[in-house]
Image: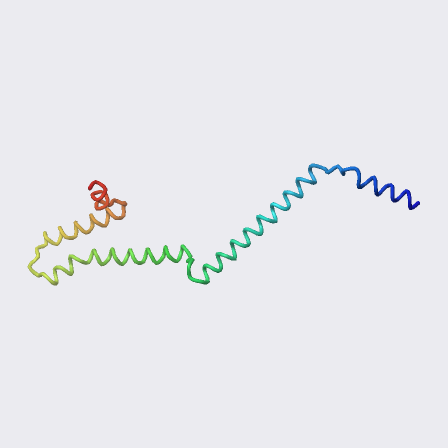
Amino acid sequence: MRGYIASLRAAAKAKPTAVDPQVAAAAIDGRQQRARLARLQADRVQLDLERERGRLVDAEVIRGSYVTLLTQVRNRLLGVPSAAKGDIPHLTVDELEILEGLIVTALEEVADGDDEDSEEENEA
């Protein structure tokens, strides 16, 4: 009996085992998925660390702050003609309208993404 078992073991070691291709593919796929998950988890930890260190901020917070800032700038610029009238009382209504028109035009150009200054610099 022992001899028979020993011969079966020897035969099993000697002959290569046939591996089912689907089983092999599943094993490889499983390893790849675990590696991918490990990379994603490491990335998540890295992002959390960066956020804690203040090197990473929420885009929505920045967007809200940016909109608030630009709204304040716009309102201040649109108030320039009125402030000019207070500081320079001899300005006429036509001159104030010209100032307001120039400011509105500049704001519209900025809103449209027109940048005449950089175009002039590129030409030079």
